[in-house]
Image (cartoon, rainbow, N blue to C red; front, top):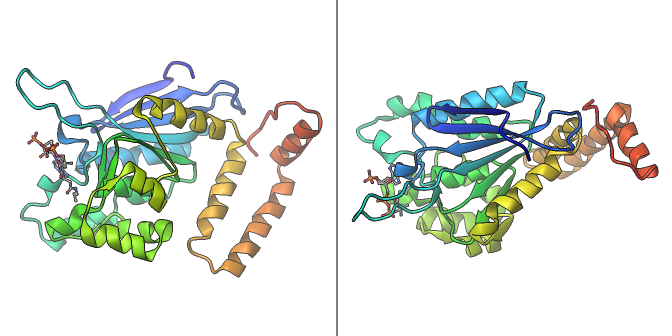
Length: 285
Ligand code: COA
């Protein structure tokens, strides 16, 4: 990958669009969003939500963005004599914003939040997790399509310890991802879940040593970013529909999406590239 084509700090988020060599149509990028409040373990406050929602709108409108990777900023070096802060993806919603709030205070915020904005993206998303991903942090990873974690990561839904429950879709997404019993265990115990246990439960797709996290994640992101951007959206939409549709309706829906792809230029390009043993030069339609 080359240098960032688009790099900016947007409130609590650092955003970089990294060009992908060999993408077609040309100009494809991976948009990398770094949750950037490391002194607070990247806890998601209202600034984080605003920035993520803004970026969701931007990448939906930018045809060059083929895939999104979300990660946490590494902890700053601790001053002499002070304890080093731990590595984190995000240690949850910012608990300091909960103090003294009533349901009327928080409802508007939770009705228009970053978790749903990420979930509703039509493009593929990957959470690259190193360190704590707790509460809203775990929920943000669950809003991504794929989760890759370092072996020193920790997941969990500790809201029960605050007299709360997950509010970013965690109960629903966990249940669909790992099943009723395991989701209940995570939500009711509030216990921390090690990376290995998260892998065994099916919360994460892959666990690697911390040194390999970036290369593993970006190799996958690049692989996805080199597909037809049109077809990746159809594929995501089809798999996603399985969460809502009865099985028989889902199979019909998939068939209709599959058949419709026969009217696209990219189907003709992909099939001919296979037969000619050449690289597909997608046009994205
Ligand atoms: N919201 C706001 N601030 C948070 C936070 C959160 N969810 N998680 C961590 N922080 C802040 C701490 O207050 C602390 O700030 P300070 O240095 O200004 O005092 C800083 O991040 C470092 O956290 P600290 O608790 O000192 O680190 P630790 O290594 O002792 O513990 C955790 C790490 C992740 C175990 C602990 O921070 C924790 O339990 N966080 C909350 C997790 C949670 O309940 N999330 C669900 C929220 S709904």
